[in-house]
Image 1: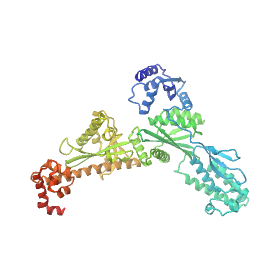
Image 2 (image 1 turned 135 degrees about the vertical axis):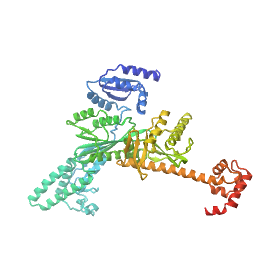
Image 3 (image 1 turned 60 degrees about the horizontal axis):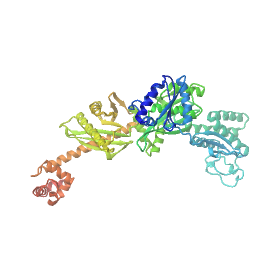
Length: 628
């Protein structure tokens, strides 16, 4: 069966589905499940795949092209469909669902056996039945390392590889002893019983967190003081101070919610220019960051749907589910997700998008971390990925713009009317794609008409390149156009793009009275960008660069015109010959230094005219040239 016939057959089958909630499974020709989805109304949702693909993103188009058949399961409610969808995704691990690969391996905190136990880190393959205690598992090696380091510093436990009691008294203590981060059992400065108490307190700290440890240690300190054991009370007091110091250092911002997850998604492009994404998760317990994870998702399609799928799969894999989840944007089916998460947690769970304050700062920090991981995977700088992601969210773009084109007009009272086009690729200038335009359609000053002409010429070149199958330079469509100008420039250019049938996002960059970037404008008014630091820096850089490029070209043309007017004062040299001389010799100095024979070799030149030019500079213009 041909592909188009298959598509028609699949649509006819989808149109026979009931308008009931349920789950559908897409299979390829080998009967492998390649996608699992849920729907409130199966007929409406599934039939969308096999109709027009105009509204589909590239990932969905590819998935549909591989669908050979589908099956479905009817449920009593959309909530039941969500639960079943999560179960089937875990069962089949479909190719076109977001895949959260849980193959990082688990990490543990190990407390060795014996009278002088040590606290160390251990991977899952290092867990052996040797009598040691293990705390975990943890998903993040970072969380384990931070916890072990904290416990050692607070309770002054050794981090070296020396064995006790075999090596007690055989060597000098290390630096940690002198900076009061080790009790130096190697020198016998602590008794076995006291050392074991310190280890047990450290284990309690690792299991229960700082709040429980502070409560227990405070009780012990008060008890020691009441029993007149002042030296012991002083040691406990010092440990309490150490806990406070370490936990305060750990706090990123001062937040009030004690148990929560913070989740953010950043988008970017990979080496093949496909839109990919990374999700970062910060997990907080007792008001402290205790774990963090990053997930590279590959192509995701719509970000809102991707967030929904991520939350479903992440909390199918992770426990506990906190009562509060802060996220950078609402997922689709948020109420349904909250209902499912509340059922898993056994209490109410809320998904919240903070707009300001400490929670918004946490989400922004989480998003910046996601952008950094995404940039590292693509071999770029994190701040560029973060800036593009922030700009996309600010302008309401579906994905970060990999290719940004910016245009500016430059003239002086309508003279030497020119334009410059600069290109930023993945947040960096792509100077090989910069272009210069001379305004040819009219004389005088009209920035709107000039911008219309430039955009028309640029996209005429695009379609010409497409016919020749050229995909570089003008052969590429921009993901975003930024005009150096306000709403009037945008309104002037929009009809040009519509006439070509193009739907490229178009905005203007507005300056203040000091010629500095103030805002971005579209058809619906101005968008302030001052509070979005990374996006503001990127837009300001683009606006400064396109202005520099355009005005530089304008000055170059004015200089050429001035020099050309000097040449046309020579008998026998008109505008055409003056232009030909400049094109051949490039600079006025080169023309001055040329011999009669060299001048005669230039296009459209003759020997008599060459002698006139030579005589002008060497007989009549010596004094003027010396002044230059």
